[in-house]
Image (cartoon, rainbow, N blue to C red; front, side, top):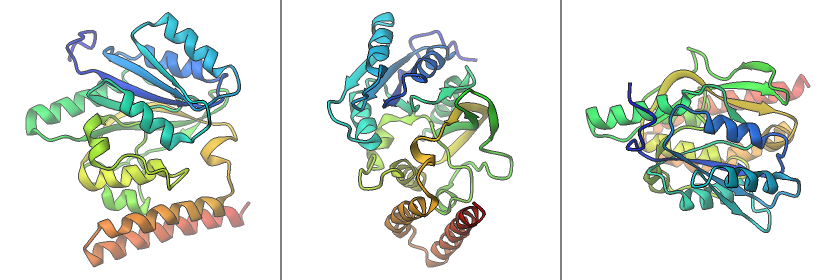
Length: 275
């Protein structure tokens, strides 16, 4: 086991995009500070919050000098802009993200993900992306379910499955910062699915590997991505899908991906019909 208190380990920047989550952001930041991987910086981009979130961020920055870097926007520009600007301001060789209403559920999450990446580099010389499982919780932290299971968590080359949305799509994964730019970064044309769009392009270029632990608690509280109606989600997803399907040049594989995606869409439509 690597000594995670050793500052010689690579610097990892955690990108926290924040907007009006005064009730949740302290738990988000505490969960990062309590990670066993210690050589981290927290880069918070507040997207013009109107509640006490900016005050809370400044309090944490003063309490943890040199550990937290804050950026405050004067106008709300959305998560794609916020995350991109924070990534560009990050000092770490490696990056990951965590929304300010979510939190790390396992203190070893970052350590295990960094171990995978470093092991692959030492053994094969190649860059990979590492990820953990996700747990759904309500606003009061009551456990609602687990995102991934043995049947829908895949590793290695997962481009086809990420495009077709036939597996658990990783989130809050760790990677080298340069991979973000090589893949083209967040595209602001695709809110609120700019994160899926980026993952598609990352999965086209790099392999993804799983830690086997539950890493992030994803909070469902009636706001954010899950709140708009399903037909609007479907239109947003089709925009991303149509932009990226051209990455697959093999027509037979392309047809397979289209079939998986349409099956996923049908399941969403059934949810709509069933209320």
